[in-house]
Image (tube, rainbow, N blue to C red; front, side):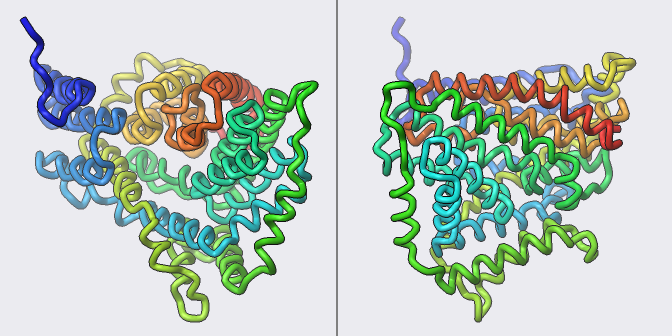
Length: 467
């Protein structure tokens, strides 16, 4: 009997993906209810599983999913609207809008190019100097626009590969991978909005939490040395071999920097906003407000007469769909908290983790997150598992702030580009071979495990932060 063709306009792959996306949640609905697994929990698991599968397969427009998922929770009466949409009353979405806008404004006026070229000129034009300059540029830009340097750094790395006519080569792989870690790793020692996303996800268990710029750095400054280790690894793995022509881009970067001319008034205004933002983030707690609100406030000053460096084109380039998507992920956690799912899972896990050393629990959690990275996006993992995991960690006496930092580092460990959109963007420029990517990221994961459990956790215990 011949197999029926897929409906017009739908590929076989699309049909299979949607069949999985629909059938698995329906299978959940066939599970009998009991006193613990009641109808509301069953509906929540089914709806959330469907949402996570859509995230994993990227089978629906991001904005559409961001609206459908939380609305489904309300329609099926799993939680009231004020709970499901509670993240809109927090600083998270407004902080992200401001950060995304500021990145577009600074890129549009040319300030970010100036910073990047200057950093590479300062470190020299040799291959090692280029990698060091990219790393330095990543850190400097992350300080002022944390969490928003991904596209900027990817474009910078690709531009260098093209300008030096490196093509798809080992040297290009080293440059692009250095740009990737210079985007991702600073968030582990510089105050980052990405880290703050965990706070509302676990708030029903931890209560309100906050952290300042200085506190974040003091607790995590050893991670800076891991960043330098990854820079050294990129140089060792991808430096020109004996007999290959040496790479020297000093003249190119000096020429490009000179093309920018003297610093414009718009760039000076942009630099002023960056300094103001940094000061407010550092001093926010002393001034009596959550520092993250500065990311929502300061970028809007770019529209004020007298500064006026923002253009309508900058606003149009802001990825508002990503902001909605993030709040939808936060709605997963908020609804789970309202249903008591985190507490339930923790109670079920207590017999398993009872008497387990905290370090053993972290090893298990690390492996859990690493494996699930192959199946889900980091955002989906955060949304689905932050609440139960942090409750388990707290039951073992682990400081939730330390555990959130642990989760951030765990979610950053990947082997293949598709596991994380941030790294996928760098790979999509076509300058990194698949083997080079897997080798470098695989070594990064192994080194991170050693660094985290042998250096960072002992450091946290020494300063009294871990418990």
